Length: 302
Image 1: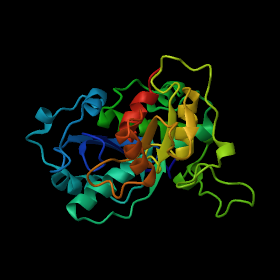
Image 2: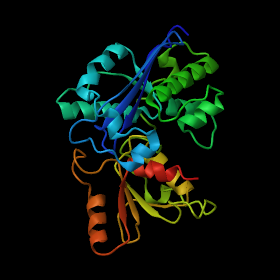
Image 3: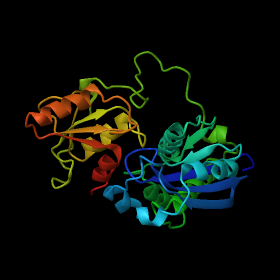
């Protein structure tokens, strides 16, 4: 596998803001073999340094642990030196891309010209699984056990997934492992999974009546505002419907939850869907607006 060379990357964040990176893991692969690994804790950037309980519950990193650590400005240069000219690989790699983009933006740095490849997309192409979390894919491929949500372990797991699927596919380059999509979709074939695509009402997935009725998403009526970093909007809709949620396209008096990719400082203008949700909540409607991290936490409930 002489052409299978890249750096796998994973970030953990202190809260819902992408600029709040508190850990990064990196695993370098050359010719299909892991040749180097590193991981750093970091203090989140000023203004993004609150540690949300839901995030701490996921990765276990606390403010006390990173108090004496450098922040993004001190980690960025050694991180980029480790990456070098490599493409970056990750599981839900759009999250890693958005962390780099938002943290650099907060520091006045440009987004570097990097190529990104996603092992989640790769696993969906090659495996038939009920779920495609990093742990699910590692288990399905019989790869070594790892400490999920440890940035170093997650980066290595992503690297091993790419290596194993390249081996099983018999490919020798990243271009063959992740072929470029067709330039155009044919007429009458909408790309439901493209960024920004909004499904027609008739194409929205139905709620699964056999889902766990005690699950936090069962019976909710959910609207998604914008595209999530972790997965395309259509995937998020499908996953929520599988948990028994009703999916809607607009914020009406029937909606109980609006999922927004980012909330608050640095998130950009508030969408019309979110504004309408706040108006309805102020009028007494039982409706909540949650961020992506909170939604993924609810989605993980079995």
